[in-house]
Structures are given as C-alpha cells and as structure tokens.
Length: 185
Image (cartoon, rainbow, N blue to C red; front, side, top):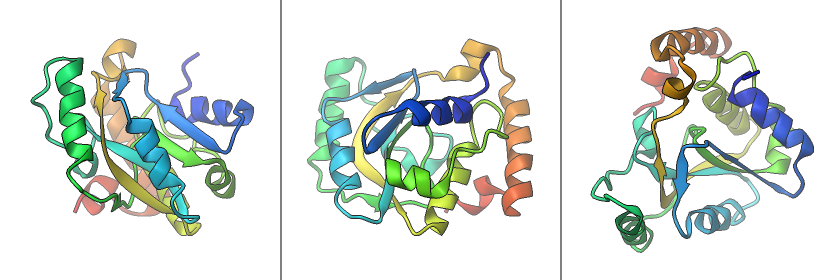
C-alpha cells in the first residue's frame, strides 16, 4: 500500500542507523560529489538541521538551477562540476523540497515525524521544514546539483492537481497561509 512519502520516511527513520538520514526520491540521479557536498554543509554547524541540492525540476523556484544544457550523464556531471566550483555559497532556506534531503537524526527527533496527513507527496516537506525552523534549526540549499526525473504522479496515476489542492488546503489549515505564495520570494 502506497501511503505516501511522509509515511515511508517515518518508517525508514524508525529502522535507520546512524546520525544522518538521507531521503531520496526514486527518480533522482545523484552526481559524483552531491552527497559529500551536502554532508559537509550539514555537519559544518550544530544548528543546521537539513540540506538539499539544486535541481532541474523543483515544485518551487528556490532550489531551481538552470543547468539544462546537459544531455547525458557526462554533461550533467560537467555542469555540476561547474556549479560546485563557482564559489556560490550555501543559501539559507525557509523550506527544503523532498526530492533529495539530507538531515541530522537529532533534528528529526527534535521535530517529530513527518505529518502523514499530507497525500502522497507535496506539503509534508514544507511543514517539516517550518517545524525545524521553529525548533531553532537552519536549512540550506547546497551548491551541488541532482537530476530529478518525471516524478511519482505519472507512475502512480495520481491526479497532480487534486493532490496539490488537498495538500494545499491541509497545509493552510495547519499554518494559516498559502505556502506557494508566501514562501516563494
């Protein structure tokens, strides 16, 4: 039974070993140093709770990086190498999207589990990020890149708009504002 990403993440967190959790969608292609770069930033300060990379297909613009010039794995890696060597610093974020998320176990435990009231995908990541900020943790987008594929909606036959609207309403009920409008500046 597919109960959604929040349920899967919570199940994984219960059985995971180690001090770092790595949540990754099944349609993400990691580049050579992406994990190491994210881990370096995550562990650089005690108050950083989670980090994520840039990508070609985020839901919102804050983790978008236009390196669409790649056509194969070699050109993807070359574009990523250029980004990583650009000197761009990690940027603080209001929330991190769920396609690729590296997080400290202690931050997960301090905040509690992902809210399984969100359908499938979309919303639990923003809700969790806001709870991390409330708990005093910081979030960063790391200047590395991963390729994000077509996503789960098509593969599972989900109605993207219906899922989005239900998750949007659920988020607004919890937080009292529209995350897409209020966090995309």
